[in-house]
Length: 252
Image (cartoon, rainbow, N blue to C red; front, top):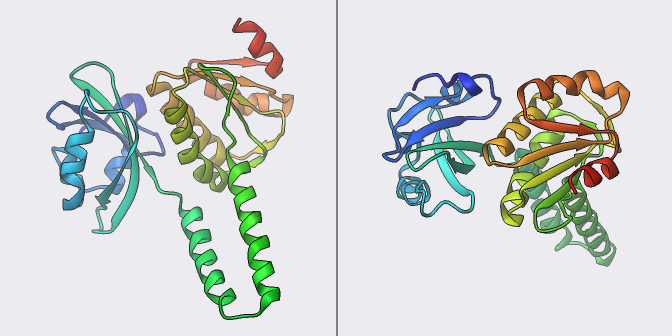
């Protein structure tokens, strides 16, 4: 696989493909995770290959698809693949790992439900409270608010670190696809801080949205965040505003 210099240091596997699914270029992360292969289907477990051929077609690409990859160590990796055709002949495909934290929570919840089925009524009430709390956490992890037919608002809360971004990134990309938005507004008013790893993941999210043709606006930037976030603006076509109100007014 050749290097793709425009996105060489992305923390996500990304591939540039032609209509024959030949890999024209790939990110360093892709070459680190997967074995060498001249074609995209050579990276996949056998059961996902035909599925990929049908999905990676300019006439059919609409929603992300779940594919099973084979790592360089032979491990099976389930990922969501998002594809954007730049023209009828060249496509960018991004592979987003399934949410490891969600899988861990889901496993714990399954175990808890097994225990509760064998216990008394008090534990049954605790199960109901746990289920309700987990549902609330899911809804608040990455809220995607549709403002109108073109614009989506995504407020970010608390500390932005790698763990949180790995949790919310797949859901944000899925929501943008589902709502077919043209502009995504990230409001940072309630964001406490962002660490180095979180910034890398946030940059990857913005780059993924840019490849999808999405316009990015960022509002509510605190002075303490400005220096860190400035480097995002050097490589992305994103606009910044003091408040969400400024973004909404400037776009009318």
